[in-house]
Image (cartoon, rainbow, N blue to C red):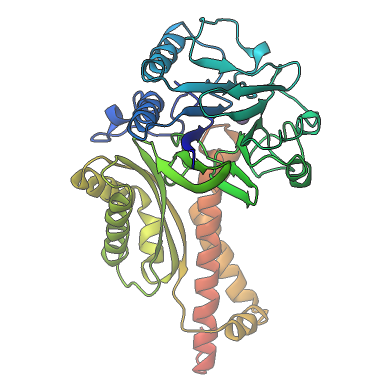
Length: 414
Ligand SMILES: [Mn+2]
């Protein structure tokens, strides 16, 4: 019986900035700095600890052309740590670090084998006998099906095909190097080491087709555990495929049901619990969380009236928990109501001119001037503010109509 292990990673995006984080006092700013680099250091340490034979990196090591040589120097130094332990690295260019994108380069250590970008190449990893096939991106936008030109599996060997692709398309990702799963399966390789899609996904298990996901989340669309895939091979067959976390900082969406809460404090208490739970899930890593409160509750109006205070209370709790950055607060709550839809329909059908006038007057008195000002002035938060005002207006109208329906039910017209 002969066996070996290898690590499959992709989308390191070294030195890419963390985006969309509003700074505030007490926020764990320092934990963001260098997160992509520290995640890669964790990957290298994992390779050393697990004594893997080689590491496969399926594209987008870099976020784009280097600002200076430091990004490249850091990467080469880490690769050398692997080289000193006799670990090979098979490297493929993706859309972000396509050959045509990079103006600076460093000669990589001898343990690194890069795939060409003009055509697919097959290389044999001599110590294990594994056969690897791959073709990198020559330009940023590769629109042809690269997989179609990949060679067939070499019989009697363990074949790994390395490819940067969106397959037949994945939400939120440019549809580069499009190909069908059927094309991949027809090649006969035992493992397709894919890159490009930042959410981890095991597309197929027989044979294995895997997106390991990116190594480190960078914003709130990259939530949950991030890392690499550890693969064990015995007698030319995959025995285990495991996700291993490498991230040093985690992103989370904390969705909190606040149905039935009477007070703002009661709703916020539920949010505080959800933050503590998300912190536990991050297993000691600093956390960036967006809180979303949803459900029908009496606290709805109170929360909306003083959203800044609610956000500050949650940020303060994040500071108390330690290294929890509350990115923002989203309210999808609605007014609590004991009435069913039938009441509302009846109320809307009232066609009571006096009631309609009262509702409109209330809305216009409060918000018309602000709405007009906002509409005239371009600004970053204008859309959010307008939406907030419109939400409030809608809720106010609903409340008025429900009150009217209730009064009518009791036979007392306003
Ligand atoms: Mn990519």
